[in-house]
Length: 131
Image 1 (cartoon, rainbow, N blue to C red):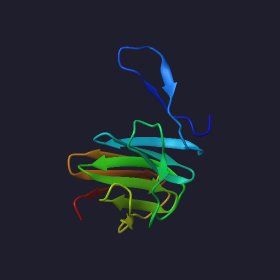
Image 2: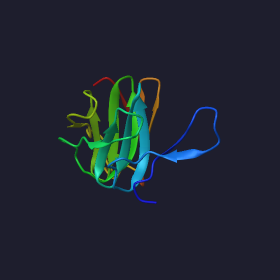
Image 3: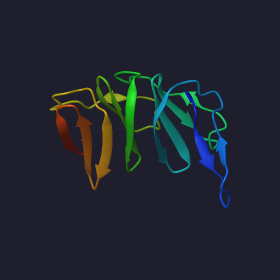
Image 4: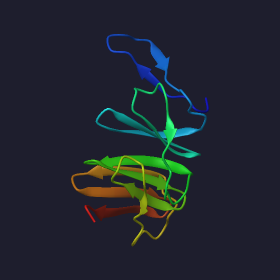
């Protein structure tokens, strides 16, 4: 269902919808501490209250068509159909980090050690951070 994020309550087997204000196609999720992020077809949304409410945090994002999210330390990365953006301030602002990325239609992101990997239809690209 479009806009659906669910959480499993501790000690329970019942899932609870936590979609307050999130009206978008959710494609990925990430967390930094107790702050949660949803990557959607309408950009990145942030929740600081366990999903009760979500706000858009897209200032400077290369595209709002977000396919993937990844976290390295306290830096958030968003993979979009136009490349990768990074945010070092919880999503308040974004900077493109696409140098050397031949195919900017990023479908997946993951982190291993200090390396960020971006999956595209042309293969996997990696970058070491911080940059």
